[in-house]
Image 1: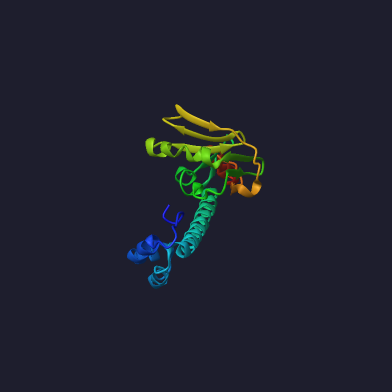
Image 2: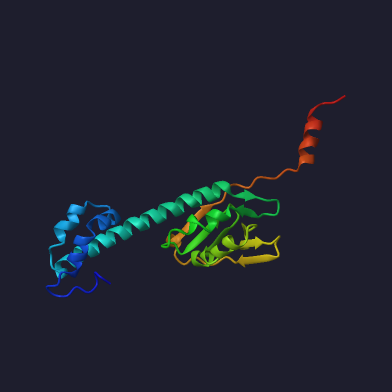
Length: 198
């Protein structure tokens, strides 16, 4: 609001910039002297410069959010675990945390060799309260969507796949390849068969 309504020949913005140059410089990532040089200008001349600094700061923040979300997507894919029943268990801290950082992405897409499941980012972000409320919260993805379970599966939320209207506005989590889980008795049987006992 401070930057939006400069009045002719007023110096309200300049006074504020002069009094808070050090704090503003830290926020904008520039030297305080640069702000002090601008502080003497009347509001109509100073406002565009301050507005440009805010726009630059927003751009840097968006870039950081995007990088955090991309890193979280890679880490989520690395930590994902396939179960026997075609469920891929996801790290709850990541899916309800840094994966949601990039607000420019409308969808989260979970891609496997056999399915591509997309859910709106805003839908998943509304589940953040579950993580704070239930210590046993579990998240997983199947070809039918993304699901959350808590209280030994008595509590549940299921989000069905949605159509992605703009692929470039989706963050992709490439799920790891499926591995066939082997039970301990199968491994023991293989060892005994290969032992060539008389």
